[in-house]
Length: 455
Image (cartoon, rainbow, N blue to C red):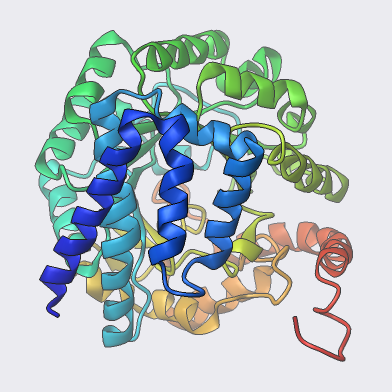
């Protein structure tokens, strides 16, 4: 059977299944799961199916999250399922694997782009400020990146910055140019208004992830007075328009009590957020506020709290520093994603500002096969303990070695930071965290260190 025919059959099956659920989600979701169990081959996504089945039977928080999706605008929901579930997760992943094998390099599930380095805020400790405020990727360049990405199987594109919504009209134009892709944007939320909500409803494939650092005092203490109120207004508008959105939270030594609390998770659910992505503060840049780095005790608290709230709150939660076991370690370097900054430098990670290539000079595939990206490809995972996944934060000698051996250069442009300065800054943190990481890993994976058997 040809690939095109197989894809068409898969697409048709997905569409029929989704149409079936639309009529009465609460009644038909369980029936759809029963049908899936009958037609799926033995062992095919068995653990995932079992988790869905349990959630449905118990009417758990995960089941409630499924139903929340059916409160969204129907057209937006249909585009999300088509672009994310089929194009990206099913069709795209298969093409990515084929190309990764063909070219012997990582091929990403998602590409992060900085449309601009400009931002309307000045947040304490923000690494993005290092880029300055005069850099932009043109619409033509972004279009070229996406076209190249789709050839490799990548249908998921994520905007960072700067503040991406400084270029609202261009981002909407790109959504129109690539209706088969899903676009997510990290944003401070202050530029989301009625007009932009209407544009999101029109194009259907744009999802904001709004930065929130806790409650008003903690949030505005880092982001500026009045920002918390503007974020609340943005979330209210999105919920009223039945638009999907999530929250992005950077946890630091100062806001950790806020963002690890039940009250905070209650706020996110009540606001209408479907997901929350937690990021550990990264001390990137010469002027990084290292005092914002969480202590081992604070990070451990996040580890336990997030896992606890996953059992009680209908919101999809990822902790990018503590959840590496679910994705096999570091996902950067094109393994799951890469980052292209506003000047075109192709970086392995949004937090690792070193590069061998610029997208204005080379193809996306050439960038994926550049020395630094191949160093990631050849060395992942960077630690067998998945609570120490990062080659920078928890294994700083790894990033030092890779940058020096590959001749990668710093891409901050405004205030160049040597890899020695970055690595030296991370060493104390890595050493302090290691004993806690070892204990937690041994507690949750008792077979990993016993020396007698394998998990």
